[in-house]
Amino acid sequence: MTYERINFETDSERAVGDEKLQHALVNVTNRFRSARNKASSEVPGWDELRTLAREIKKETIENLDRYLIMLEENVKKAGGHVHWAKDGEEACRIIIEIARKNGVNSVVKSKSMATEEVELNSNLERAGIRAVETDLGEYIIQLAGEHPSHIIAPAVHKTKDDISRLFSEKLGVPYMSDPADLTKVARERMRSEFLSAGMGVSGANFAVAETGTIVIVENEGNARLTTTVPRIHAALMGIEKIIPRYNDLSLFLTLLARSATGQKSSTYVSFITGPRRESDADGPEEFHLVLLDNGRSGILANGETRESLYCIRCGACLNNCPVYRKVGGHSYGWVYSGPIGAIINPQLLGIDKAPELPFASSLCGACRDVCPVKIDFPKVLLELRHEVKETKAETGKGRELFFERLAFRLWRTIVTHERLYGFFSSLMYYVQMPYRGESGGLGSLPYPFSRWTRDRDFPAIAEIPFRERWKELRKEIGEGSTK
Ligand code: SF4
Image 1 (spheres, rainbow, N blue to C red):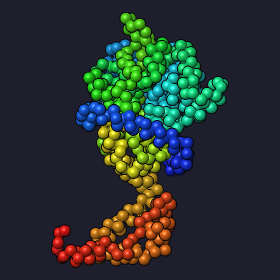
Image 2 (image 1 turned 30 degrees about the vertical axis):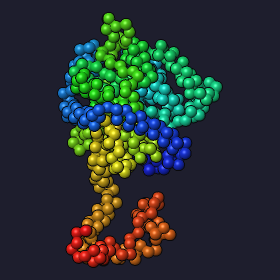
Image 3 (image 1 turned 180 degrees about the horizontal axis):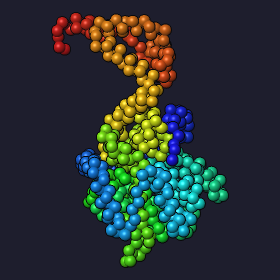
Image 4 (image 1 turned 90 degrees about the vertical axis):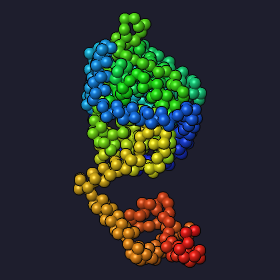
């Protein structure tokens, strides 16, 4: 699959000017944030639990090969099939082959970022297989022909009015203003899809290596229907979703639900170990687990950014990010948005496809402070920024980089030589004069500084430098005083 270059700057400018989106973003992220803060404050030793989860993920990712083989063995022991997909194309091909082999021409899907990542729906459609999303948010997004704009709330950018109009246009139902009526319409449509689909496709929140169990967390019950009603169940998951032991689940489930929605537990938590057994009342006859790499091995090989693979996709970093809260999910140009999108998209797609994303952060660290696995975002972002600069140099587009380096070398020379610094700041005081605005700040500097002053003033250089004022002050309080 080939992806276009992501244009964060252009798309985010558009998003900031969209009043309706701004309103929706504030509402939803505020609601998630306060629910998460309340839920986490009620758990004694919350921070220690996050540290423990990080340690478990670190150990798992560093031994990923071993745990994946263990998972494969245990899924097979339970009667399931395991498939390895090196990229999105292979993942789609595997799922299409499973469908064709079983004569399936319609599929129900539960929410899965991995299937969004590989564009499974459009690939199924091209293969003549109908795919229907059954998570309400994903269903809305599918009808609208859009991408999700939040990891756990895919239709967060849509208002009730948008959804009513969409349902009228696409489903031919009258305009409805009550969300309960809209949900009823979607539920009725889905029921018949569940009953007629030959295959259910899901993602997985976790896969337990020691038992071969996949775990799916949700609130609507649609994932449980997707994985139990159709004759075949195929689950697609990124290789990083693995955890070593069954006993680790209680920790991760505690962290995931509270970090995501502020719930103590999600409404439905399904544990799936292989297909239906003889003694089971229901369940699929076949269970397939597709393990997706799609660039993850590349992240694994980079010790500086490897921790990006610890993510359990709770969405807390999005809700707390001052950038996401202004620009929304679509500005990030791909399925993953917010701080996790800023670090994952450039690594999975290639840094040349998303060079602006590592810069889509103020490095305030709010994402790291809420992340249940304590991903050190500022560190990873700085590393990726460095890679962006290096890539520009390597591809011969390093003119900008050359001047930037030159500027910083000059600056270093100036600030490390007192006399030179004194001369330079006096000189700059006079140079800046034509640019001083009424507020006293510098309002419209020439290029390249205009990129800063386009949106805000630059502080003006004071007439009396601080070192002069300091000398005066020392005289006033007495030479050599430590006051
Ligand atoms: S990076 Fe951390 S906070 Fe963000 S979605 Fe992943 S686990 Fe949640």
